[in-house]
Length: 296
Length: 91
Image 1 (cartoon, rainbow over the protein chains, first blue to last red):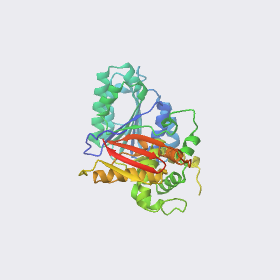
Image 2 (image 1 turned 60 degrees about the vertical axis):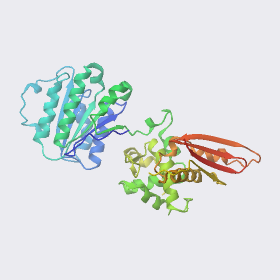
Image 3 (image 1 turned 90 degrees about the vertical axis):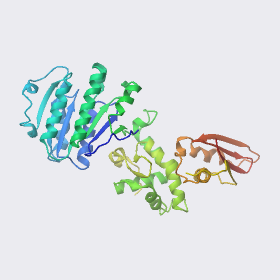
């Protein structure tokens, strides 16, 4: 699922992830995505349900792998500490500070994010936890205004932010309106969730998706390459596999485009660009690489 | 894409397995449209091409099979009577 880019002159990016999972699952995913490729210099974590302690526990395993400035904004229905009243000075922020904010005080959340972004040099990634409680309890127009402001700040500073919401709890028109604020709207690439029956095991889904050898070869090739590959190049590589029953790369290309790639996308194992011309292994495929029935 | 004046293309004597079926249909549409076989949306989203192997793979004689579906703006008909025939028609 993709929307049109809103325009990101400074390379800023706002991504909305539709996922039924809560912050205890989306935060570790965010942290592991962030640390595995191109670690940023700065991290801002905005949580609505997790406590700052829980955030630190989530980060602890990965945090030592890179040196990042860290800012945690803990948004709650009740203010936990008086830290949020200590003024707008960014002093101390870069050493890693937890700020507690009252949930309805949207402008305060935006201000703190803005302070971090102004204070820090280099690439900043921002995790915005589950918006679901906000959308359930607060005025819709306030939430929209809040998101409008945050996405703007992110864009202005060229940061990279990921927001999360449970699509089940969103009215479809709400999602349509939200969509316009983001550069990209994605569905969490969890292999099991993309399959209609959640009772089916991960291995069954993978086995089915990879059943013809050609799809297995595709995944193996993409995991080895670890970078987007053009479908044409993939086809040329596959024709060299002895157990692939094609004569012309052009014929492989047609079968890839019309059947195998869409099926692998549906299984959550690969991702493609907008016009399906380049392809790479999904994070889920990488994560489950050891689960894959590799022949080599 | 400049459109061809023809509205229908029939491919006869096709060996209907999954890959040749995809090739026949995609190339027929491409030639109707003077375009590329990958200009249309993937067939996967409309038809279970793997099932075609089973449906048309039967060797029974005197068997008539007629299968029809719409993909994008095209009606695709696959017939076995007993020879195989795929026709692609612009709607």
